[in-house]
Image (cartoon, rainbow, N blue to C red; front, side, top):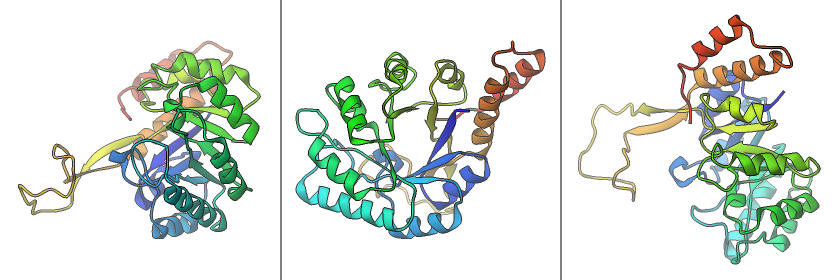
Length: 270
């Protein structure tokens, strides 16, 4: 059955996603930055309280994936810490200035991450040669690639996802970026083995007093009195849809299945 990975931005999100039936969690901070390495305190709490696989992201800053020597040193230190804490996997990636895989540094990452499953994240979507990068990652022993098929959304990138998935001898292709309940069947029907979703909702701040005219964020349009969290109802609905899709094949969907799918289509996710 396809694996559902949920992106979580803290302990509360991780607890909600795990309780709602996620198969695996990606743990990170800073959703508006595309996901950054989370705090040591969060890592400790999640490791002690979550009992499904959790793969923390190691990304020292937002922006591109070409890192300085100092940034790379920090990444190796973070990966070693995550390994020593007993996490089963880690999510990371690094490119060279030409847009190709930085093989030398990725080899060092694989050495430090020995014993963990390494996911190469969406740095893949910014590389200049996805087929070459796929095979190089396979040679390095990378477990999976989180990718949108080099498009803004995984739905738009589905042709490349299918092409890479059909190779079958390298890293697992995990579709991510805009995977939601409404388009999940497209990925399942295409034979994608793993999907990644934030299954998120916007939740208002608990603050009764909201100071106008002062922002802590460089994005002046962002509403700092809204936060992103996992919607457990969406996680449950996505898992139900995955089970229905599995149980309906190779048989034809029944009226009961269609009725249940109509009910699930009322939910949304990111």
